[in-house]
Amino acid sequence: MSIILEESIRVWMSGSQTLRERIVEQGTARFLAVLGSTAPPDRARVDQATASARDEVFVALTADAVLSSLPSAPADAGAREALRSRWLSLNPEWNLPLPVSGPGLSAPRLAIAAAIGSLLGMIVLGGVLNLALGVRGLGMLIGGPGGAALAMYAVGRLTESKALRGVLKTLLGVAWTADLLGAASLGLGALWGRLAGVGLLRRILVYAGVVSLLAFTRGGAQYDARAYRDLVRDLIRQWVDVSSVLLCCLSARPVTNSSEAVLDAGLARAIQDLHRSDATSLPIAAEALLLEARRMGLDGLSTPPHFGQSDHAEHSRLRWSPELEQQYRPFGLIEDGDTVIVEDEPVIQNGRILEKGRVRKQR
Image 1 (cartoon, rainbow, N blue to C red):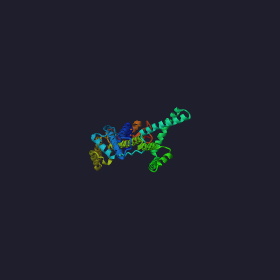
Image 2 (image 1 turned 90 degrees about the horizontal axis):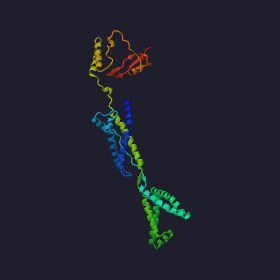
Image 3 (image 1 turned 180 degrees about the horizontal axis):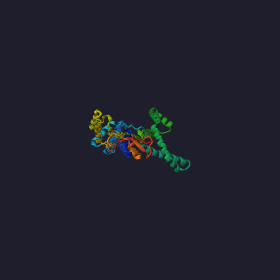
Image 4 (image 1 turned 135 degrees about the vertical axis):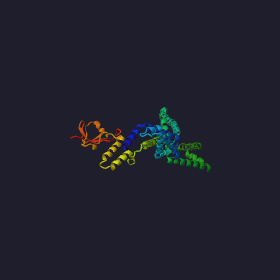
């Protein structure tokens, strides 16, 4: 029975591959829709999206059309509801992980950095090559992409590196403090300005630029949305496959235990009468038992029994053919066309072979 069940599950799983993939996509889409924005979600939002995706998958996987296609489909609506209830109680728990996030800049900020870097690269490199070689166009052509790449790398490093941001903040604080002290103490501001070689207005613009750069590169937590979507899809696919196998196993009809099988009342009475019979009434009791067997559809009992015949009955003989393998089990090597002796007749009830007979080759 277990082999038959495994084979039926394998066939159903192979035939429902497209259905299960569609359910996986539905669950993934539902999860991402509830998850919402691209900002890294917290545990509560992931749990909410997980519950919504689980409900979507459960409803799709236990639809009436799906349950009707199972190897052992429920007979009616009550059986389907009972199957759903047992399946839900045994289904594994869903627990999707949080996405792995890290510091990063958003796409608009990266675009702004690339644009500014491209302009500065064209201006600087174009001017340098124009003064040196008189080829402004080549400098602007090279400076555009070079400046964009350098600007994106710079803001990326400044976003990721806490040490670099700390150095800039320290230098900014020292310079700003020196300006304040110089302005407040005996004209030292003019001395600091001469040492710096930059006027006060320009220094203020530099300070504002550094502060703006630090604020611009203060990126929030980011995560790879595509990688997280693929991870969620793979986990949902695993749960769908496991749940499908569980659904097939629960839908299988229970096998009747031999210890719980109920014997036919008439047959049981005939067996008891045979057991209580003495030697003289034994043929009558045996005939009564055979009559009950015929009533239950047991084939091969239409001829008179051998114990009622005076002469010793010989075993019947057959000419072996491949068709006989459905009813007889050969003993030894038997080839097509050989004459065989029937040692045991097959047990047949209502046209169904309960046990094959046994034949051996005639020597």
